[in-house]
Every structure is written in C-alpha cells, then in structure tokens.
Image 1: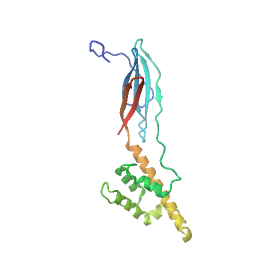
Image 2: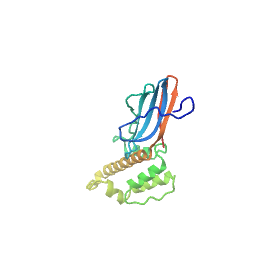
Image 3: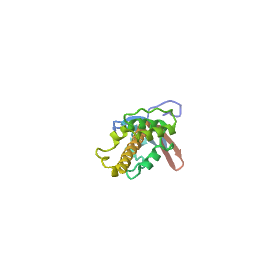
Image 4: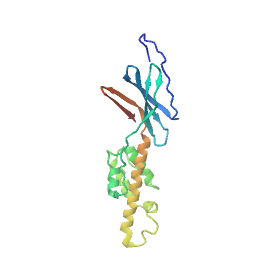
Length: 203
C-alpha cells in the first residue's frame, strides 16, 4: 500500500492457517477505514479443487476479522445411471460437452487392448473406432460378464448391458479428465456500487 507521498509502507500482515497454496489475492474498498481481502487457495488435490476466502481488515486501528469461506457453486453431474447407452454415447460425442483431446484420451482408456488410429479432430473416425470396438472380442472380454452370453435368448440383453457399462465408463472418464485438466489461474474482483462481484478464472 502507498501513502499520499507515493511511498510504499507496510500496514498489516494477514496469516492463514489452512495449509493450502495461495494462488491469488486482492483488496476491495469497503469503507474509509476498512478493506476486504479476498484470497484464492488451491488444495493441490488430484481434482484441482480450490476455494475462496475473504476477511475484513480495519486499518486504523489495525484489526483483523475472521476468514470466511465462500461456498463454490457446483454444476450437477450430467451423468446418471438411469441414462441409456445411446444417451451416454450422445453425451460423450457432443462436441459442446468435452474437447476432442479429452474424449480421445478417454476412448483410449475405455477401449482396452486396441489401438486408436485417427486424425486429431476427426470425430467421425473416433466414433467409428468405438463402434468397431463394440463388436470386437476385446470388448466382450472386458465388458461382458462371464456366463452372460451362454443363452442365445439373452444375448441381446447381454450386449445392451455391456454397452451400457462401456459408455458409462467412457462418460465418467471424460468427466474425470475434464476436471483434472482444469485449474484455477487467478481471482477476478469487480467493485461495483452497492455490490462486489468475485469469480475465479480457470484454464
């Protein structure tokens, strides 16, 4: 902070005992003698979890408030056990749901025992690879339960169940890789008249 003479002066130190990594922080004006300090913390977990806290600081006399955690809003999980294999497939290969790299990597994980050969960004070829995998012995050995194809009358149901397990695994892998690929970059603060807008910039 600088005083009226343009010099940098130390006014206060704020400590936090949450044991996490500080990514970004910012100060907002609250009133002539008080500022609101906002901080973005990274939990350093495998899911790139983060949280935002803020604390009020009385400058004269120097007093600290208590850290208050901001509850982050979370989107509902679009994947449900009640979804059919076709619905799961359409969700995975919806270009607005996940980037091609995420889906491609997920297909490589889900299609165990096969090579994936297609050009980057070729959604049609990627879907064709999955369709071919569903008819392969590798698919049967991984996703078809033992003994489920012993009766011809139940072969159709067995195939449907196996495809549902496959697309459920594929969809969940896409979600997991999507979450892991995103991380918080910084804190966004906008001081408006009568309100404060805060947010987190993600990669």
